[in-house]
Image (cartoon, rainbow, N blue to C red; front, side, top):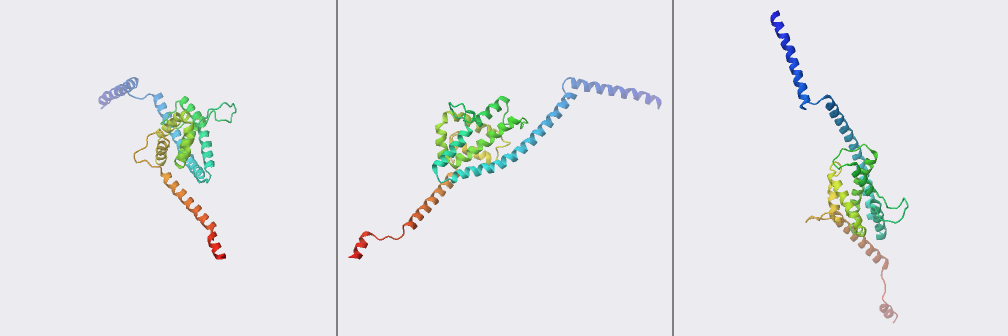
Length: 257
């Protein structure tokens, strides 16, 4: 029994030593992760988890802002005065895009939201598929792009004729920036999916960023036309009710005779 035990003990130790050497060799050759690599992977997973939490928080904010944006677009649509509608659309688009100006005042449209945001995102090398950032400036730049592009879509689809007139005046300056914004949002599947992606696709067709599909229709054109018809009918009915019955001059003369 002792001889067997004595023989087994060194064999066990040698196998442990061989196993240790194999593990060390494997780690040295890169087959197994080293301690620093394990720590790096853990830190990476932790960073990804935090980015996901920030993304979910922003999705909630984005959803609540969409309600406000749709209300804003509908209010502009509901204005009876065409010149007021035009002015509101013009102000909105000039706030999103840069307008060339000779003025040096800080409140002018020299550096506008979309242009500034594009520069910051490109300088940071932040792509649409990258994890949601922790830097506040980059978070603000992302939100500016996401929110202003879809707000523009709200207005383009509801007021296409006015929007195209304003856009045509500055097309040479705005087109490349709008193309970039639409492409960036289109690749941001974590935000632009479902109805947001569909609206982006419709807006890009309506304003001419991409060719129209053979079966393309603006869902708001028909509803807008129906609203205009109803308004016209109501105006005609009011005019008829105000006129009332009137006697012609010939009838009056005959009665007097």
